[in-house]
Amino acid sequence: MSRLDRRRAAALGRLATTYARHLARRALRRGGGDGLARFDALYGADRIIPLTAAERDQLPGHGGCIGCGLCGFAAPRSGYLRPERLPSQLTRSLADLWTSRDLPLDGVDWPAGAAVCPTGVPLDRIAGFVTVHLERAGSVAPPPGRAPVLPTARHR
Image 1 (cartoon, rainbow, N blue to C red):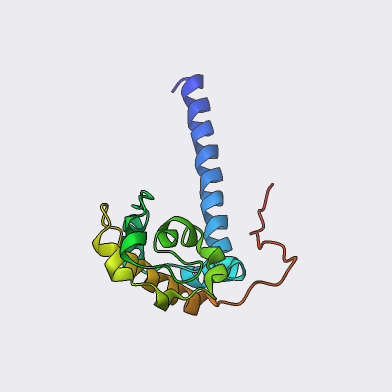
Image 2: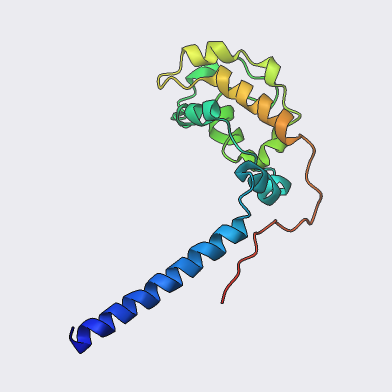
């Protein structure tokens, strides 16, 4: 075995040792607990709640609105709330969904608006999604001046 081969083997050994140490620290830091509980602990104060598998499957359909306004002709508005505002403005940020807490979601004929949508945006399912998330995340405004919850990073 030449000197170059021994140096390469020693370098690979140090690399393997360092990587094994990294994996061990990472496993200990995680604690091996429930991932959803950690997610809720990190992001719950910011009103970011985990989605169910069915909700994740629905999300691509929510973003299909092209803003044509046809649903606004088929379903009358209810105060500020117009059918075309639901997919384009009110569901962009789930953490800010509490701002729609006072909107009369029952006052709009969502199925009629969805029936004329050229891209097939399911307005009635989006309205149900908003209602469920308001119930799960809470519809009370967050306290003013609250700093965002950020995970702490460990640097060496």
